[in-house]
Length: 195
Image (cartoon, rainbow, N blue to C red; front, side, top):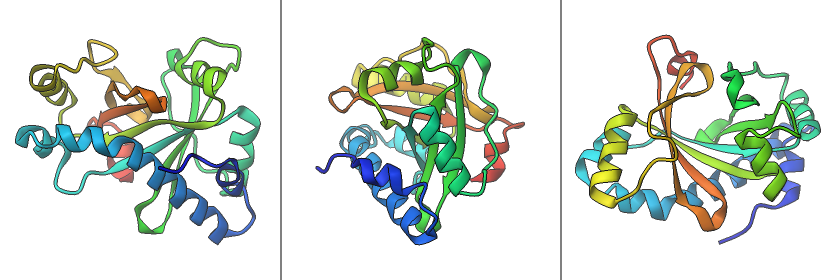
């Protein structure tokens, strides 16, 4: 399996649309492959698979340093920042490209802080921090993973996510420093309409 290449991240801030789209596709495909073996095993449970849907909506979360975040955001026309709960100490925006490649670009509001993104960047540098799967009921998905696969979520309760989502996080593929996130849109969520 290929590693994330620094030039792919750099290309997300290219002035060329095609170069940005190609880089996003490479990062997206790599993120999907990191989570694939774990989620494929979990999806053998029919009830779990139903919660994800026949063709799951997947977003790859790319954590980058603040200066890279600003460069990528500028090159992509200043996409709107997501509303991230303050306690998560993160800034985020979404990039969507033809063919379904969807990235959440994330950074820490305080690089010296103790939030999940600051911790990730301090340990691993720029990279794929999470792979998010849209899920119709995160609490039910968590119960199935706990009961059928002995996999516990990082936090016992669903937590608020960006733009009003509710999410559960699982260390599904720890050797790759990537977590699997299951998110459900709430009634007031902008993401409910965006996807």
